Amino acid sequence: MSSVLVTGAGGFIGRRVVAAAHDAGFDVIPVARRSLPERSVTLDLTEPLDQLPDADAIFHLAGGYAGASTETLEQCDLRIARNLIEWGIRAGVRNWVFASAAEVYGCCTQPVDEHATTAPIIPYGRVKLDIEHELAKLSEQIPDSRVVVLRIGEVYGRDGTLIEELTRRFRSGFCPWFGSGRIPVSFVHVDDVARSFVAAAQRSQTGFSVVNVADERPVEWREFLDHLASILGTRGPIGLPLTVSFSYAAASTALDRLCRRRPTVTRHIVKLLTTAKPMSNTKLQTWLDLDLRYPDFHSGLREATTGPA
Image (cartoon, rainbow, N blue to C red; front, side, top):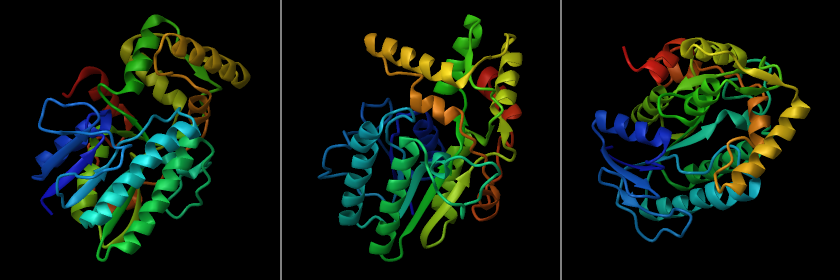
């Protein structure tokens, strides 16, 4: 395997995946909605795909954001996946790695492994699971294919929306949070996510596989937020009761739409941030043999806020 087509190459994770694949020696073909500084294919993947450059593998990351509605995600994520799968079957692409999400599990009280029941409770998780099912069918149609689904935890890192938005709110003196913050979550640094794509392409086995992508220790949101506030030298988050949180989300969404901005706090985002999603990463470390660069959020937040040592 020498060439890889990366969809969503202009996004927060996609840019890191492109760099990691380059570093691993792949001939990378970035695909994005808008032109990128490096050589890339500019394409609207929601339209039928007549022609894409030949590639040995596809890293599929393109899609909408977690707080979108079912209709929006079906018109974006699901349509893109189906278009790409149709093209990939015609092109005979045998190697696929897909960016799914922890949200396919729904609410988990204990760290779950890849055999756990999937019961998504927000549109983002439901659509991700629908795409997983489409890829499972694909793996049965293409002989000797390798299809890997990466169920990714809460991603953070330098230049990411999560850190940028939290930093802005902390420094403004008002960072509301939803509920108590005592919700266990598996975080993962964006660089380790990128490296997991490369590991999946290099080390996965024939057939359909699912791998959780998370760091070594699930923690509560409150611990993550308090540590970020201490790094920034600001006060911590201000907890809002859930009933108030949903009202706040509705008002925030209305204001963002009035200002023609993509909403940053929606009802689905509140639900996402108040749903427990701890995961086991044993398969990531053993089956894909990935040695995490940032095994916990303490080391990762230092990179995200102050840069590499």
